[in-house]
Image 1: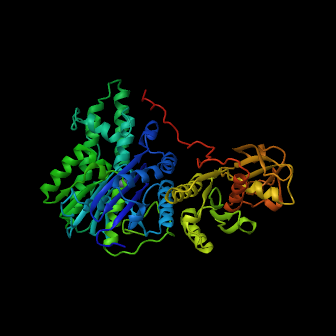
Image 2 (image 1 turned 180 degrees about the vertical axis):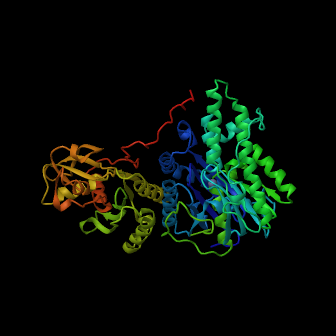
Image 3 (image 1 turned 120 degrees about the vertical axis):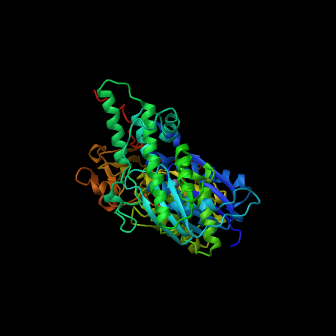
Length: 361
Length: 223
Ligand SMILES: [Zn+2]
C-alpha cells in the first residue's frame, strides 16, 4: 500500500447524504454526493427509514460517478474508508455493508471511521492544486454544527487523540432550526429559511433564553459546572412556541421575521460564546468550523468576530465539504493510512453513538 | 453456472451454488442471529469464497433475496449483492425470499399440494405467501407476498418460522416451525429457474410496508 500519497475512497451514509469521495494524500479528486433531502421536506425533518431506503438505491450510482469523475479505477485504490458512526443506525448500516462488500470484492484494506472526526479531517485537504497540505497546529479545536450534531472538540492528533469538550444535551442546532421553522410556517430545511428571513427582522425585539448558561451549569474556569461547554436547544424551541402562541392569543399578527432573527441570535450567541470559552480555557488557538450549519451567515459572522477578538484563528472549509460528504471520510482515511494506522478489517459493527475518542474502529 | 447467493431477510446467509457441483452446493453459511448482519455477512462471504477456492472472476451471477423481511437487515444483503455485482461486473438477480422455504417444502416428504410460507414480520405480524405444487416442478407462487396477522392466513398448512411463533392460531408444520429463508435454497431455486429458462426478479427490495413517517399536521393555533 502507498502510505505517502495513498489513494483513498471514502463512503458516507450516516444521515441523508450518500457520499463517495476520493482523495490522493491531501489532494481532493472528487466529492460526489446524492441527497435524499427532497424526500424529507414534507415531513419537516429527516425520516431515518426514508434516508436508509435512499442510501440503498443511491450507493452504486454514486460510487460509479465518483470513480468516473476522479478518473481512477477500483484497482488503483489503496484503501477504503467508511463512516461507522455516530449517525442513524439504519443509514450507517447501508454504507458499512457496501464498504465491506467493496473490500471483499477488491481485497483492499478498510478503515471504519468516526464521522465527527472526519468533519475535522476535511480541513486537512489542500485548498487548491499546488497549495501545501494544511498541517494541524498543536492546539486545534473544531466546532461542528449541523442537523445531527453540535460539538466542540479538541484535537491533539487527528489520528489518535480527539477529545469531546462539549456538546448538545438534547437537540442539535440544525434540528432546532427545523423545528422553529415549522412553528413559523417556513419550509424545510429550516436553517436557510430562518437565516434569510432573519435579515429582515429585529433580533433585539424579543430575547430568547440561552440554554445552560446559568451559574449552576457554568461554574468557573477553576471549578467548572456540569455543562460549562454544553448546549441545550429544547428550551429555546419551547420559548419560541410560547411566544408565537402569545401573539396569537392576543389576536396580533405574529412578527415572524423578528422571531426568526431573535431565535437565530440566541442560537448563534450561545454556540459561539461557549465555543470560544472552551477554546480559551483549553489553550486552543485554531478552530475549524464544520457541519451544514456552517452555511449560516450569522453563525459565520459571529464566530469570526469572537474568534478574532480572542486571538483564535478560524478556518471554514468550502461549504460542500462542511455538509456531510464522502471526501471528508476519504480525507481522514488518508491521514490514518499516512500515519501507519492498521485497517479495521471487515468484522466491525456500525456504532450509532460512536464516541469521538474512537477515531477509527 | 456458478451463483453467489445472499439472503438477509431473516438470518444472514450466503452460498455458492453450481449446476456442476454435487447437489449443486459448493459452500454455504447461515447465522442463527437475525441482528448482526453488518458484522457477519462480509466476513462470511469472504470465508465462503476462500473455502471454495473461488474468486469474483469465477462467479457467473449474483442472486439476492429481496425480502420481505425486516428492513435494515434486508438492505444489508441487497447492498452487499449490488456492490459485489458492480465491482465484479456480473449480472444481479433478485429472488423473493419466501421462495427459499417453499423449495425446501417441495423437496420434503411432508409437503402439501397447497401451502403457506410465513416468516416473522415483527409487530405481531407475519410475511406470507401461498404456493401450489405439481409433480416435478418448482413451487408455484400463487399469491403474495403479503404482510398481516397470522390469524388472517388462509386455512392451509403453514411452513416457516412465522408459523412456529403463531402455532396457536395457524396450522404450523412442526418440522418447519423455526425455518428461515437461507441463501442456499434461494440459490438453488435461482439456478433451477435459470436452467428452465425462466426469469428472475431484479434486486428491488419488497418492503411491503411504508416508512411509517407521518406528515405533520398543521400546527394548532393558540385560539
Ligand atoms: Zn455531519
